[in-house]
Amino acid sequence: MKDQIDIQFVSDVMCPWCVVGLGNLNQALAQLDDKVSANMTFQPFELNPDMPQEGQDFDEHIQQKYGISKEQSDQNRQAIKERGQEVGFDFSFKPESRMWNSFDAHRLLHWAEHEEKQAELKNALFKAHFTHGQNVSDHDVLASLAAAVGLDPKAAKSILESGQFSEEVRQKEAFWQQNGITSVPTVIINNKYAISGGQPADVFKEALEEIISKEKAGPV
Image (cartoon, rainbow, N blue to C red):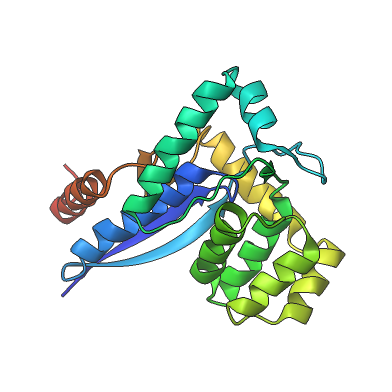
């Protein structure tokens, strides 16, 4: 009988290391598939909650936010591209790449969880932003992505235009911040254990095995 674990993956659509972390976490879970059954949900976190609707040039944003040079930014991108390749993900950074406001994407992800399409939409959003350079704050783009994973595009558009699930997403974001999460990805296991960063698959695997062992042992 497999051990059941609950995973809350706190992340932002704008975060490349969240792509890497999710890919490696999925690899670790695949390696543990004969022993572990995981229920994973995606929790909202905005790296740039004040990002304007028109977005910002990617290079400009990174250099301003982290106080680094263009050369350092280029080096970081190359490192991310290589880590992405390890998990089968294509980061396609271009001169015209932009950062976008991700709040509406999080609202759609909140809805997709109830429709049991959250993982599919999360992956579609990552690919749309990082591989295809699409504006994932645009309602038409978001509705199209919803349709691509089997969700009702009219319902998606209605949610986006009405502001539905705004309060729920704000509450979730506040909850994670109040519980000390300041960077993503952060992976919460069984509401007790936190693993931070885009860790390699073997690090996730070892951590999961250790957590399962502790859970089996019960209270000390």
